[in-house]
Amino acid sequence: MSSRSKLHLSAAHRDTMGANPWFAGIPVAQREALLGAAELTHWRRGAMLFRQGDPVTLAGTGLYGLVRGMVKASTLRHDGREAILSVIEPGNWFGEISLIDGSPRTHDATALTALDMLVVPPEAFAELMRDVAFANAMAALLAARVRFLYALMEDATLRDLRARVARRLCTLARGDATQSLEARDRVALSQEALAMMLGVTRQTLSGELNALAREGLIALGYGKIDILSFDALEHRGKNG
Image (tube, rainbow, N blue to C red):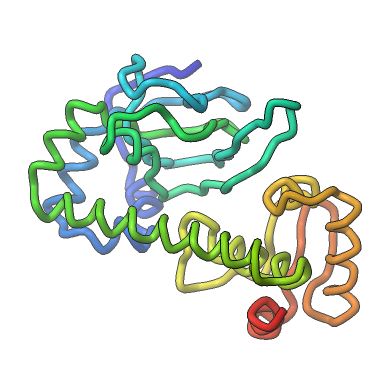
């Protein structure tokens, strides 16, 4: 469930949204139009923003802009096994695919923490898309999504597991969905969640992480993985 309030973004909130590379690259007029079309909502931890198969016409749905908290994009197999597609951090916008093609949601979106979320209703999004500059910006966002998916397909088919682990850690260090130019030296994610991202068991992942730790590339901690040499880890991911 969510609660809604009159939009009031603090300077800190605006800084959070503006730090996202995609949003920062949009012309000022289009950025302000997007923010102006949004409603600020608040979600409790564990809340479902939407489920796979939900129609885009469902009440309260729209384009989402994450101001505070973390969201998990995932899908469930028929046997209940979960695959985590991405962890979405503050500053990111998501949910645009169903708004563009009118088809049902492609995955689940779950609040990993309490959230402050901007929601742009479908009608307002359609109006924004009439603006060429905004439509071009959305095309660029979709292009980035496609590149990310192609990279995941390449990893799954051409690289060994250790290289896949190294590459995903590098992606997470840049913010996963955000892909900031600056990489962090710590990935605050459980090994269980990382295993679900890679589609392997927790035990299999543990072996690969320990191997990378022995190579001096990472250091393991409870609920976190410290990256000791990003360049070396990135090199390991490209050559596996």
